Length: 605
Image (cartoon, rainbow, N blue to C red; front, side, top):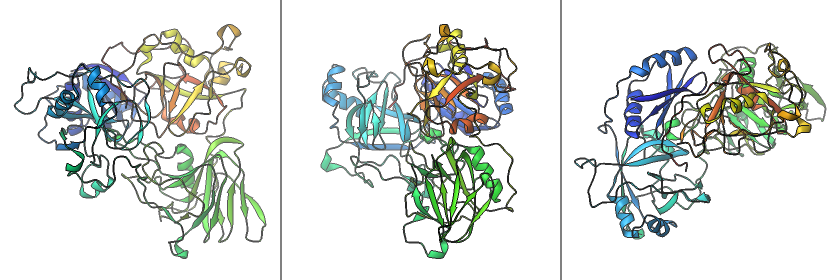
């Protein structure tokens, strides 16, 4: 039975349960019989995150879910996966001593258990497995066998856990699919490949272990391993890329553009992947979606046509044949240089031709951070899991462009080239005296903070830190001398409220939690404002992890995420709480808290 329903932004619900068994049963039911408008269901230790296409679908679901009758979880359609394990982990001896058992007893406990893939998260192919009775085995198991273990995380996480490492933490067992940071206890390794995109061609999940699967760990000696793998666990994985360019291998007449200078970072992006969070795959996609849609409208392309996303200018492209381009997003100067050295300026948010031999250079942004460059016909690239987007966290999709890369048109034009658009740019942001206002809704974990602290989130300004990227924007408290003393009307843009200025007595500071401890890992959506213990928010962008272990105090609405994508280090912002139904600002003192709940902790990897 669902114990609590919380909203996680205007288009997502977080369902809470008493037990993991209830989570598995409900998740299986919602996967087989999704609610109207349901985009995905992301299971975690005691929660399921449901994301919907629009607000009306969420409201309809809220009325139906309390009466949802759950059956028992069925493993009838699940796969059985056997993983050969060499028990040589760095933490094996220490963990056995911590659990007051011999190394042999710990290995026997791990291998004699039946495990169930409970939920994904952290990284593509990383599946949290929990002990479960084997068929015909009593729920309480063998009285002579140790019961469930509560395995502590390492006090200092490793910066690089090898691919294939078999690990324990809390009540869970999992295998790291690729080299990544991690704080779990390493007890061995498997040569099996946990994540392989080639399986998709055979109609299988790229994840070797998926939620619902039955898993057994089989102890083997190194020389007895029979499992084949494309790469050894200790090797760093190669980027799981789709092809998009060549360095001299394509016929001359097929290339539309050549990259002369890729700048700080230039990525191929479309509107991203959706519905794959259960596998640990986030949405990714272009950060300034409004700019991408704008350039594709100008060029007569379909909305999903691939574009280039250039960070902080610096990109130089040379036309191999006459092409039509458009650039939106950050306010950057566009310089077109001919083969004879002559130059001209091109306009932003307007289509323009680039003749064979001419080059386009993006200068440093006057405002904003990311430029979106569109090509009539779109950028050709091979989809990975249904999208050509580069995911900087998981490594999925094409890698960053480099000098010498040659780009081809994808033939995605569906209409005529349009006249210049009057639509404002996402980078037309206010100055330091009038910071960027981002609208958000409270929840799902606003109850981890007092009403006064939740209100402080909106009452004070925040500064974008240097530690920001496509995964998320880390916000900091501004110095007193940096605090912009503005009225609510300026801060909230169109809000009709009374003036309120930050005073010395109300100097900005980090938020203080009402609750201590850790939160069980649970699904998070793009736009989430996650609050680490330090009390300064992290705003999740497109490449965010699909689960998180810190409370989410609020969610920035989808409509304002293009603004967030253009925030540069040092920019000031204000967070404006809005009603999730009307998206109009709430009264300044209104800071709703979700109903309290308590559940055991799920360790992040």
